[in-house]
Length: 294
Image (cartoon, rainbow, N blue to C red; front, side):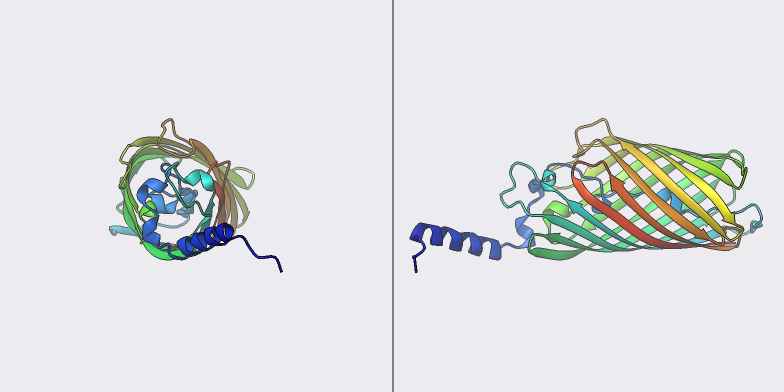
């Protein structure tokens, strides 16, 4: 049997020992090229704004301060390619991020309204053969005013923080955005709704604290297939004009199946994805939401 040359054997052994000895803390913050859209970076890349199930005109409003209660359970998976890494990264490995999340929401007041959301998620970061769990937590305030039954506007103020043993994934994000919403009247068993958001985002980590502008335009169709069943496909376009994000333009898309839309308690099953992104190789989410109107 032919012997393996000594220098090749030593090179293989050193490479094996190096990979075997890596820990999450070895993936420093400067391994990341920039800010990549995604849950752990402080803003949701999927179109979560369409999950707020509507109050039908058939449901009377309570005179109390608490108007609605919202609960969302979701599972998301994101895979990133080598474009995630900066030039200083010495150990480039495939990245997979899995999220198990719960979001609590409260609708307060009549008009103007105050929507509060509290996202809580357990995450798993998998880089090559190394993985570690983390935590995402934050809060979102959305005071909004409905001009009439078709048009509303508001200012969204949010903060989200991600923490784990991977320094390159640890980051907080604070954002302030102006949002306007439009919904058409029902006709021929369907209608449409749109949402425009112009926001300023402030990421914070060990190497990046440069703010960015993000523009989001969404549209959804509401197919009222039955009094107790609606189908809601949607699409959202995202654009940033700065150099902070690893990609300046991408698309979110998905479909919701809304059960009992005309009842005080609504339920929604949904699937959403992300496409056209240079760094996010794959992104998919499944969620179950429920909302009680009082």
